[in-house]
Image (cartoon, rainbow, N blue to C red; front, side, top):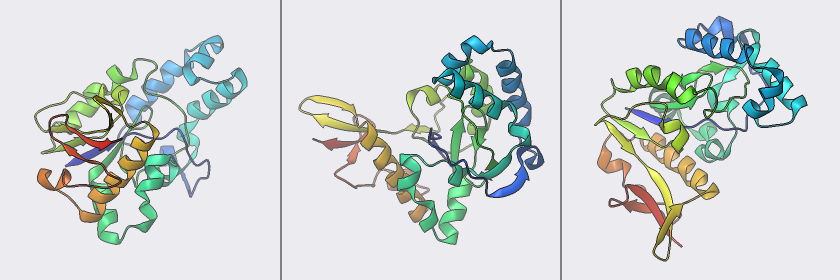
Length: 232
């Protein structure tokens, strides 16, 4: 079983290991190198569009990315610091839960590939919606995930395009019902998503019926909409 979660834009810049990314012998080293080759060809005038920030910051992020193989690392679960990860609260896990987390959760990174929480990764910045990265990663991600008996997809729409779903896939959303309308839960969707993954990890869930038994912050499973829904 694999539980797919997105990376976060928020990242710790601290490196907890002296190991360089090159020394980790990443199984995705080849596709990562291809992405870096594509980045090298980007004209400086286009970098602001790639990185979505000012010229000065874009140049700094570009240099950071191009040098990732020589940069030091932290475990992915501590590198990412966004809302999902804060509410997942991995520091609170006991050993069995940590083992479950590392075995079953995968982070769909636009630059790092499919990342286990204990994978050593450098700091970087790259979104999935540039350079046709969803198409680029699709054969890699699809080949790996097709071997799983169950894939729980908790991804945003753009990341869902980075692999091809099969009968083994359950796509789960977090929505709010306002009157007759059902809309995405927005920022609070990230909060409840983190709590949901925490629930899966702490209870070491493997059965689909247990997956949808989650109830917290007034979110309950709605089979019709294939989502956890909160009535506002």
